Amino acid sequence: MKNGSPTNVNGYGAIPSTTSQSSAANSEIYVYDGGNVTIPVELLREATNFNEENILGRGSERVQAEIEVLTRLGTDTWWHFMGFVSMDMRSFLVYEYMPQGTLGQHLFNHDQLGFLPLTWKQRLTIALDVARGKYLHGLAQQSFIHRDLKPSNVLLGDDMRAKVADFGLVKNAPDGKYSVETRLAGTFGYLAPEYASTGKVTTRIDVFAFGVMLMEMLTGRKALDENLPEDKSHLVAWFRKMVVNKEKILDVLDPTLDPDEETYQSICKVAELAGHCTAREPSQRPDMGHAVNVLAPLVEQWTPTATTGDDSFNIIQYEPSSSPAKMES
Image (cartoon, rainbow, N blue to C red; front, side, top):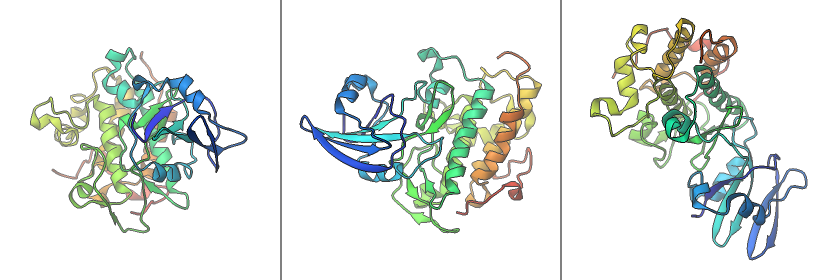
């Protein structure tokens, strides 16, 4: 295990607030006190065996910066941080247990892992959870740019509700319409064009990545798949080329969805939103408030009736005024 390796441990539901420090058995244990809560290293050993198979992912080397961000996040759709342990030159970030793994596993590896394919209602709800978490936190005094939104960073609980994880690349959002220049980071396939070419970030780069995730949930395909021919390997370009009108949407859908007419109408609206979110020009992308506005009625009103190059993407025209609030970038 490397420094910064995240460890997922069940129990202790407190949200971090203040910091205390103790030591035991040649280790330093830093805990966040949410009401007489401590996290002993013995608990981590019992829960994980410090086994490579129990590592969910490799964290960044910027553990201190990540902790500072985590202690300021408090909405229900951000992965709850419990504390961290520094032991034998290794650091472990401790989070709440998310038993259903990642969205990526359910979208791309469900057969190998023995998962049932996600239903359309589940996909809608997960998308809304991610959008709402970004939007609600953006209404706070200080908003953040995640910079690495992707299915492997969306974790699922037993109720299949989603929480956004991995905050090692988070940047403070700039005020007003200004951008901030930063070192290029993130995952190819999800990087907004202006970020990939200039390194400058605004809140709209997360909107782009969110649009890519919507396309993945619609198609069951990865953002970048080098096993496919070049004209099909980049999901955004392929999706835009294929989906020129409503009638073409069925040609790109994840075959496990097999929609009826009611589901199809819902899918068309999400495909439209995905197209707007991935517009080449950031000014042409909606904010997360608009995404919430589109998705929330679909989640609340939709019920199954059966078992379970160009920036114009005008299946339905996007109206910026429909957003309840603007997160200026």
